[in-house]
Length: 586
Image 1 (cartoon, rainbow, N blue to C red):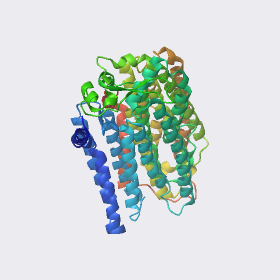
Image 2 (image 1 turned 90 degrees about the vertical axis):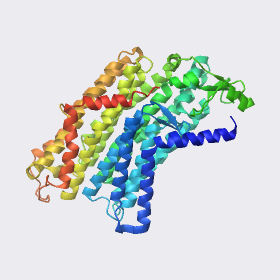
Image 3 (image 1 turned 180 degrees about the vertical axis):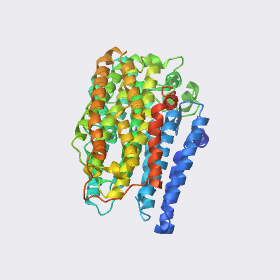
Image 4 (image 1 turned 45 degrees about the horizontal axis):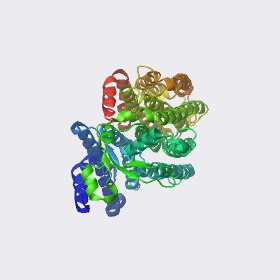
């Protein structure tokens, strides 16, 4: 295949396959451009709210439509930089649904004002675009690009409350910590690329299996571990996982409640989806790659002590041994692996799975424990919810550890464990968005965010207190609320992973840690409910009722009802989540 044919085939593939699969993201790009143009042309005379809302709705419609029309399964687009499957479609639709609800919340709460709305919504949708790329990343450089696209807008959003010292301090801390984490992650990516000769995740998994099988990996395990830990730093920062959580409480206290909802739901969902992609990328060799991947012998460099076959990045172009031989003399010895089953590499990747499982399990255990313990002494409702967010990051990492352990042993159970992630983030959307929405509305009414100032609130606004209590009980995981179903599936995945001999003790420890922390979290959530219902009203609080028969009241009911409904009828969502993970491995 000559250069002209290659360029034509890539162009045809991009236009016919990649761009149609990328329509929701393209819609976000067009929406951002329109909002920036409206800022230039109309200034503050035109609110960007309507453009942002319309763009999010169109993007969500296209995402849902692609779910119905996707019948191929797993498909790489843009020459392997991204992967298009139902997992991508699910998280894309989830993020756009959140964008719709979030934009409505900001309109009702009054942040941003008309002057700042184009900038604010451009940053929000730009961050959502980065998170969509995180959910579909299939290449290390795309991972870094997506993380930065999601992070940089978040830094600016944290400081959107102009004139407030706390908001500026929050943004500054966020930027500094984020820059440090990004630098460490990028160095880890460079080590992995140098060690394995590729940044394409499936190719890297194939390389790892080959190196381990050939016995040439022994002297490079330390470099691999160091690189893995560095990449984990970037993921832990996005997840606000211990010990890279220190930015979260200060940023949540200084930023507005609306921005906190964005950081705690959308940012965490994107990071979890990326964690799943990386976990699968380094522990599984896709069947199509093992069956028909072109392999070219490459002479070892100083970093490689033997001749290692490097798998080329997969592109949707027909490649045969004859084509390779005629196109370049350097690849005249290339062959096409045929009849090789991807499961043949499963056993060789067991050490990698053990390392990833132990790392994720350890971080998950200390994260949920620290988050719950630190939440006890908080007097500011946003700081308390920040530590709650940290604790839930620990819970949501547990099924990833279970899935990694089950991979190659029981792939059906592994997919079911991965399916807990899309299920839980859907439930978490309504719990945390509802909690921060109530905090925002109470801030507007009472001009306070201290828990003690919520004392006796049930006498003024009983409907609001009932909704808030429902959300807090669901965050604990009490039946019959949606949070209980999420916790139940998490613990069920850990029970399934006990069947793996080398992971049995770790899974039992995670089960105990998860159960104890669930009980511990009840106390600080109950403290808020007790304050709102039993404590006497403060004399200095602004008097007035929060009307439930109002746009703000309707919004609170809108995000609280799914917490009840999904707690009673959660099987449909569970089926949808399992469908999203159906083609993760192939």
